[in-house]
Image 1: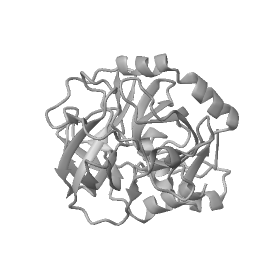
Image 2: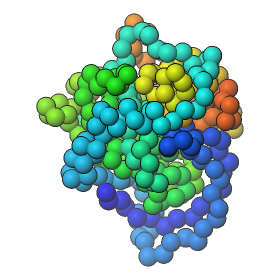
Image 3: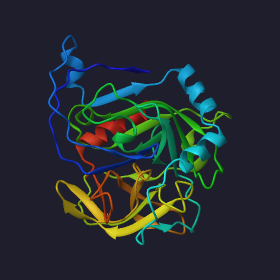
Length: 307
């Protein structure tokens, strides 16, 4: 995996519970301690607002081989974050082909997962998720590996195949300051040479959308009895909170990166992606929070759809 280096200055910013899962521990995006800027890196790289990680062809082949059906099942069984709350309901409607589980090995070497969504893009290969599903905030070298996207995942079934991630793009501000928790991924074609959205379609994406939409938020929460094997949904009207937006929701770890779909039509499974699950209000969650996607997020998405 390669990455453009950059100088780093960490600035603490309080964020509540993150949503990726690793082993038995709910990942926390806590304030980072100040650190000395690294030396010897180029100013041009630091000026780039988008951080790009690239996985080699060998790494992508290894990722596909690593994530066997047994391993996918095992990672869910290794995590139990308590009972599924009353706000999160199993999705029983039209199969949502665009939403899936994003499996990876985190920076500590643990198997884990997030949620991600295929979106409309020029290269027909873009996926949206949370930045903390790609790398640890305020920590340039703690990055995730062996990353694959399984759209439509349900109880071990992979109806649309498995797609290896070849690039993972995040805002530079996430890498340096733990802000702007969103990411765009670029995936390989499947084993039959088909591009992602040719197989499953893609959700529309909107930026600079005013807060206040009625939102359907989806995720593969590590709560029981689902334990990441079924897609859950919360529905609520977004409100502003601490620079983010929030809806009532009690999904937990594993739902990170799941889409916030406005204008959602249950009959078609389509809506407009206006953000992704980012953080909870507490370890016993009542509220899901997400970024308001603006100019920085659009730069990340635009770079991904041209990759």
